[in-house]
Length: 481
Image (cartoon, rainbow, N blue to C red; front, top):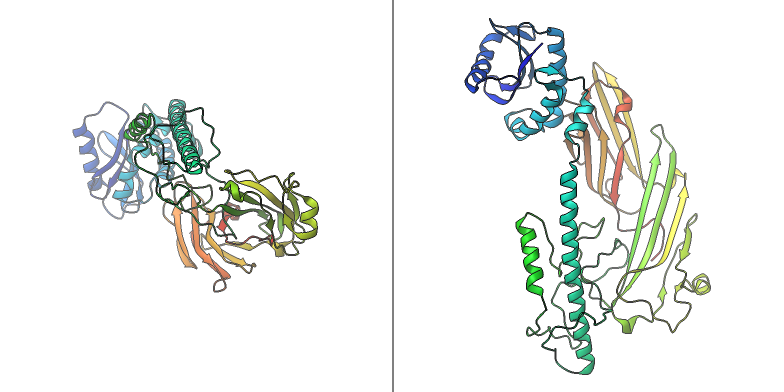
């Protein structure tokens, strides 16, 4: 058996994607594909048609045709097996089964076709193996990205050190009552100023923090003078420009990258003292009801930017917090915290370290109590008339709002998007990952419950599990502020 070509054509015979596996001129393959619509006619129940020299094995794809051209001596059963596998591959790689969707995924489809057919003969592979082979990582590409990332970090580190030296020089000149020096500080000068590119890994929850992206100011509140020259700054900037020319995205020192888990870009805080609270929730629910496990981990971090304000104590207000285990930093006075709910150092004369955030309190809780879960999900798949009807509902049991709720439901490999009958929110079908994404911007008192109903071809109920849920909130389960 020899496969001459695998193609996707329109109803009029226009070739969108075509992969030839034998030496064949462009005129001949275009002629074969152009003649195909005239051969199939209308009302035919067969999936193949033959001419004097070749055989067409085809399958409709909405407004298109998936076509395998072979010689007449090929095994028709193996031809059909190739066609079925290619019919599963096309919707897996193309976002939509129209001219635009096929054209955008043309090269991915060609690579996938080559995994199925080699030199005109079928390879013994499955859809999952084709997907793994086409998504395989390149060692050379990974090594190149590591080298670029290393160079980028080195350049940012150099700029960070220079910025610290500038702040140190300004601080010393302000204390001495003199103007800004007109020379670049020596690399040996120490610095305890805040790292301009420091990225806290905390999400601000209950304590608002003011930020500023303006130019550095001296102790009198005036902008720094423009007469200062930064040694070797031009060389660092030239290096960054060269990286940008290669397509790398580089951030300026004044604009720090966004913190993990925070959508808004992170900027340097200007308040002398700030507190951030972060809490993460991991819950595993059984599909038949009940909680398999629930774990809450949170923490409070203190960041001091002004050394004059570093001798302080933090008074906190905490609720009953049944089941939560609270732990303080080893340098925190535990007796003071237990008696007065005040976080302070064991040595009152010792200041908190300035610059980087310092974790002063953390908490943890594990439970299987379903009433503690802030958002419950129920999934009810059922079969009827050769189709699977899936009903999913959510119920919020918490008294605070949930934001950016994203619910991912796994689906079988489909040739078209699922049919949505009813939904509270928005949805999107990701054909590449075979999942439906249900998104709700905010869940508050007005929509504590919601549902989604969609229809797909009949499949096993286990296909729609596990359902994955992610969300953000501006309050924590642990009552602490």
